Length: 287
Image 1 (cartoon, rainbow, N blue to C red):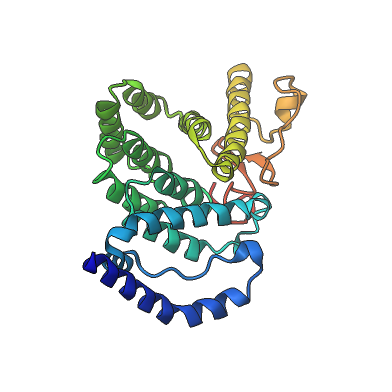
Image 2: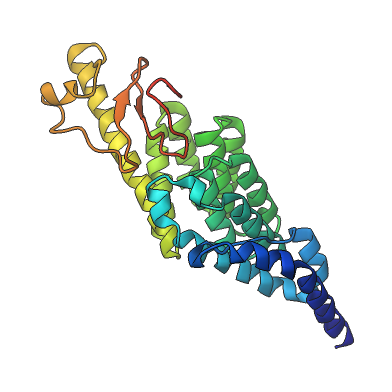
């Protein structure tokens, strides 16, 4: 009992030390923007002791509420109005304090991989969580997807997909990996992954984030299928996507839900000026 009381006193002292900086930072922000500073996870962990589980859950809840309040900015690609650095620090601390909390790593995968491309950082968090949630097949599934879809490291991807298959007892991940590696179905893999994430997300803000990306990839897949049909009919690639309409393959060119414009590059790949991320650029970038 004395130990718990002492920990509580130490926590209050540390809180008092951070309070002036925290209040000054927060006073300059409006309601939904108040995320603020979070101490490093290992420091928090050593100070809080048995209370770390509750603080970890609280920080995860705080992060998701903040992110949900920024959905409009994310849809409009106003990424500078989102405190991604503080958000990452908060969810990282949440995971260190309570690696068993499912929403924390699920949210990290949703917010930082797709929005700002911090794949390596999220992979590090997932590997940390995997040490504790040894029964959870979704963690190696996420890692396998990140390594294959974003990093093109197929050897590591295959390793994690196999791990997911072993834990779950389902051959789905092995089949998914094989189909992707041998048929090159990058967009199809993305759709399968996003559909799974959307259907299994418990938080509305996370579901909305995946819904938008899923919609975008489905439209890209439709255009890719259209280009394949065009090549089959005319033995060449279309120079512009509107040729898919003039040749009767598609009724119309779909709109990019991120506000950009779909186009076909010189290699026959479907791209968009929005890049489905925070990076804005012309049609020659990333082609």
